Image 1: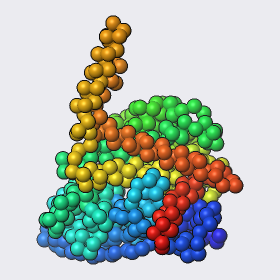
Image 2: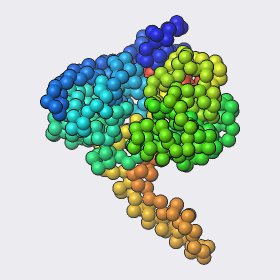
Image 3: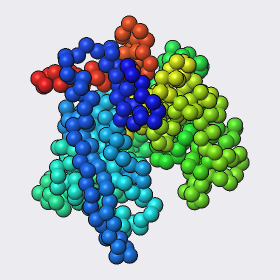
Image 4: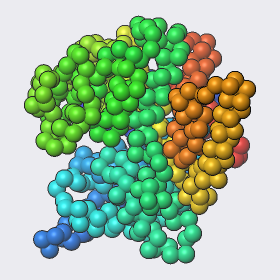
Length: 474
């Protein structure tokens, strides 16, 4: 395999090079590999929007469909000043493999709008988002059965609600219009647990990792998450929830948080909730009480830690800094944070990498649950909730009758736990991430050599995608 220089290796090429490692362990019919890796289509649109001051501005955006071997295709909508076509294509490819890894029946897609949301008012953003949505809808790039967007960097439930409403306006007879997009507000067709889904999924992945002592040993670690020192880059939606859950529920210590204006550090652990509130108020982590601060956030990646969680942008670990990393476990919460060449160097050093295509799949998993909810037109748990409550009461009554003692309050609460939507979402997400991890772990030892986690994850994805193509007679 020819290695491209850093200056020539694009994001999409980096993804393809990593996928190629897994292809080396598969025996495919001629030409199928090229079909699987190819990006099926890319739509570029340019459209004008009138701003609050009366000025018209033209925006550029893309929607890429990497693979429609399963439909609909699925992928987020990114609003950012650095968005480029190659980036959108790479992210669409990652979505194809990601969905296959976690057994979500979608093809891969991605959208990107070249914009800095901070530069526009809420009213302007709504007009821009709705116009972008109209461009995609009119060209068949949004629809509950064909192409379903979701939130990504720079977007959230608000933007998804605007897109869903725009789809409804353009297709007033579409009964399933809510299913044209996921990540919506709960009051408007969304699902409980979607906002924190990616961060929660990261927590479930790491819990499962620490249930496999042989994998933990490979990373020169012992025990479980309790007391583990974590450096996290990015305190956006994904990084914030991952750090919050790992520290508050699993006893991990967040010893450093890297943001765009620098890094804050405290060996005793940082209070994630307080840091997030401070960041929201001051738009900076500088000056956070009780923490050391350095303006060079990149240096935070080189701090000694047990886990390095990358939850910001792609290409954060490159040949320029990879040799300075002082961790034995890298967790890719963002898409593409480690370049191909850096990944090769880390594998040579024996550093364990839990890859993006698996680790951050919690978002698309819960989006799948939301899509199913929208198609079925019923809230999960609605029919079973009171039945569960009655069943719990009967169990408590039986226990107290047989023992002559009152069931302690903590056990009573567990037995009375109702199967509501959030509980079902968390259960389904936990099961999905655990099952996917086990498939990857098994694949690591299935071939003649022990694969790294990234190659094993792509191996799992490619086996499933190949089977779909061959079953369809492609």
